[in-house]
Amino acid sequence: MNRAPTASELAKTVAIFNATVSKGDAVIVTLDSRETKQTVTRSEAFILGGHSAMVMLEGISGAYAVERVQKVY
View 1 (tube, rainbow, N blue to C red):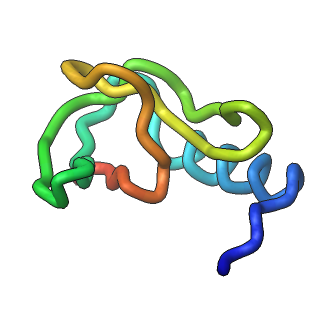
View 2 (cartoon, rainbow, N blue to C red; view 1 turned 90 degrees about the horizontal axis):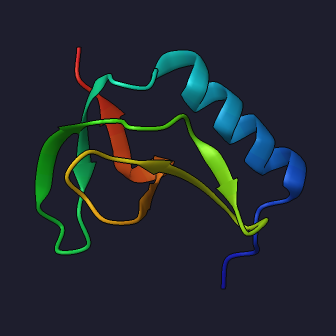
């Protein structure tokens, strides 16, 4: 079983994501179905509930873990 990330690990993950991906950038997200979808970010990354680094995406309800989101270059 994996351990939960610490607050400092989450903060670092969010900072790295936000340094490389801006609000409005084109990204590819891996959906729950394991399909991929190209979209754009509609928020900066943030920590949700003290346990997950997340980002909001255009055309997708809710937030997705930043680990599942890659910037399109």
